[in-house]
Amino acid sequence: MPQKTLRFKIHQDGKVEETVEGFIGNSCNEATKNLEDALGKVTVKNKTSDAFISNQSENSTQLNNESNVSF
Image (cartoon, rainbow, N blue to C red; front, side, top):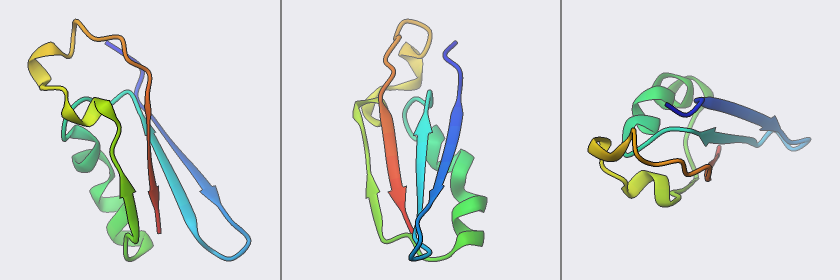
């Protein structure tokens, strides 16, 4: 199972960029929902190929792509 990582970059203008790694399918949305609600309105959400992989293939995939979210 790949390591799951959440990274946050806070820009000088107050914009928060969240990078999510190691989540398959829609699980990244579930993992970050409370944080995104607390931080404010999501303005941009970019999905990577990991978001389109079904959970059935979680054990067979070794992709290491990133997903970025900006607030």
